[in-house]
Image (cartoon, rainbow, N blue to C red; front, side, top):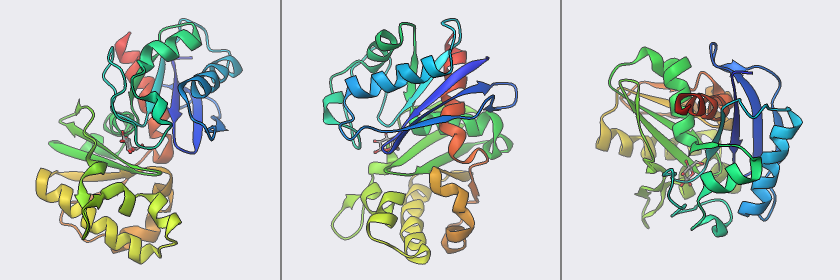
Length: 250
Ligand code: BGC
């Protein structure tokens, strides 16, 4: 096994061994629903069980994609969609202790952006590529000529009449919560992507997250100048990127 990747999300915690040569799962992934009380204790236990399930040897690099800004060696300072008790926790130390080995933690959107720039569509672009993951929240990754600028957190730009958090209006969870048609949601996404386009002038957008596998439903409604591509790795990018990140830290 080259490396093992884990993606901690608002609805599921998923893990798989990763073939780093090809940027693909080396075996079928396992998904456990995120516990209702997604505390550090509960989540760490599931992460450790995933490693046990796949019998991951202690010598294998383990990477974890996490839905908050992550600064290695510093406690989590902001948490949008998991239990607030994560704030103040040094996640790298917490997970490494629970898993009885060093674990490398990276923001989930950054993991996806990294995977796309190593193995996916974004690999073909020079300049700034912005990966946007649409799920419970909105995650963003800025990759410039293949180099990640971490923790961009642009899902929390404000938009709309009342200056709402963009992810509240345009994440896939907003589409589901408000039962929006693909067209209506596509229009909201257009507004969001136009903001990013205005501030960053990227060469390309890559759209990831679970809903990216249904891209043909909403891409026709996206009206932006910048080319928009569905993530090549679809929803696997978090796991693959986390594994690649861990291997690069060894
Ligand atoms: C978090 C980001 C994360 C994104 C996607 C946002 O609410 O603040 O850190 O990347 O959701 O999970």
